[in-house]
Image (spheres, protein in one colour):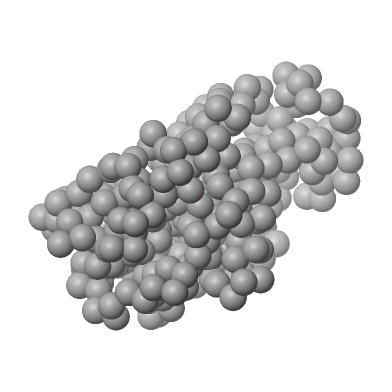
Length: 311
Ligand code: PMP
């Protein structure tokens, strides 16, 4: 991905650079989202914008982050940033963060503001290459330690740890387990699905799993296609015994798993292929009509400026 140099910062009217001493930099105290913008025949659209922004608001609330936004101001802010970018496709990342160069860990003491970075991100012409994964020795954060439904910058240190170790061991990614149950949770930046005898299963949200929006979209599309679905506890052995395994996330969509440690999956993946097609159609607006999934990107609602004061 290439950065488009488009950042919209609200609130105090600051420049795009964050002070090095900012609490969000020093302590990872920020919550964020990743949203894809796709080119369609009628213009660029943001895929499942409201679902992402609702999760952003939930993340802020779970961490006790004070801010001045509601769904409407977030929608306007992110929509304007996307429009100003002039791009047809991109990866859009709104981050609720604090710029204050002060230490301390009581988040109520800080002013939080929203910035949005957009990377140019053309859609893949071909499905992504199937990946080789391992089971990480590093488990997901415990729900007893952290509200695992929150998407916070600080927790990505855990993903980075697991992914870096997996890469050093020659794998593309790692499956992380729930620390308490020992069951399959998700990969470092994606949810995991398995297919067994034509049915689709993904780990339930009682384990340490981010409630992925692609996960939700895939479950919906599977039901449309008449595929049986279940959100259930998943043991590592079940993952090994599966006919197909794939990962889901906003950035990459559906990614097939070619192997888990030394176990190779069959190259024939009928259910993954059908769901990948359905997902691609959905993001490009070619699937069943679901107005809430596609938000058209229009011209900004105010004068073009990279700095905005809405908080
Ligand atoms: N789990 C983690 C840890 C992630 O970082 C992501 C990416 N946001 C996902 C799952 C997938 O979530 P989504 O489909 O909403 O992108």
